[in-house]
Image (tube, rainbow, N blue to C red):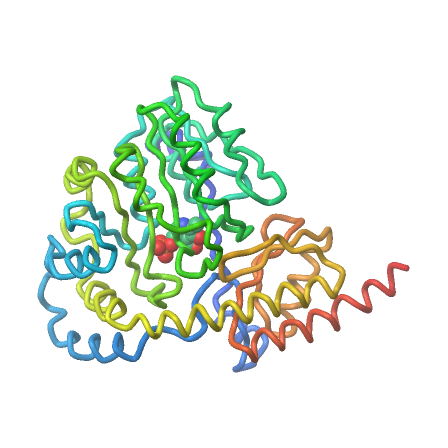
Length: 366
Ligand SMILES: Cc1ncc(COP(=O)(O)O)c(C=O)c1O
């Protein structure tokens, strides 16, 4: 069937998002029960037990619409961040906020700058809004904000900076972000996407929220999907100037964050000890994964997130061979793989299986 005439032309250029392969699919295909998914940057320990308790208590109330103003969660979050509730945007995942920010500022023909490789939703949002994505290559797997600066022109309306970056996991210091903001014209909205914030342990990274009073064109995004372990419930947030928040309130859906997600997020904020446990495990597994890959002769990017990225010309074949052994990682185009940190067991198993796959193929290539 040819493309029906009633669809907007800009949708032609958008490819659907390809998520990591569902674990259930692989288990069905292989007839196994213990497949391991280290593909979607999820938290292997899951949410805090306090989240489960709060959800059980909230379940009987799901016939009611949630609080559309998200009073309780936004005040808990404001306290957690040391910000005001009127500076917060809440979304069903930070993904929603990315799209809404695009819809808030982009007119057809405007330009959107982001890094390549980078998070897919930045460019799909640009296309959705009939804007033009202007991807900028990474340097040493990291954002090169000098390139971003040079790419800005009168048509530029939106800049996305993922810090740490997905898929490379690399981080740039806050001073680089500050220098960029100084050089950035006020008509450009800068979205600093800190989805992996809690996993970072480099001291030059923190305190981006302090930039907000000086830069009303800055929005900082974070999420409950990663270190807080709520990916399946979909809740993320942004921190921005109250006037931007007011405009967002006009265009979001009336009940954009569901009731259970709000209850879970608030409970998750009450158990930061659990987040610490998650990030400490991640730190250990990230190092184990990184060092293990180096030992196998690969050159992973320096990561500050909960995943490790490396380039290899055999990415597709390695991905397929890992699948056959019950392990799902994430191919990033034909020449790179991204592996999420798992539990100790998952990480050890991945390294063992990967070595077994890699070594014979190397011997064969000699
Ligand atoms: C850089 C980045 N931003 C945003 C998101 C979206 O996260 P969520 O919608 O689950 O909050 C992701 C998810 O993987 C991501 O990697």
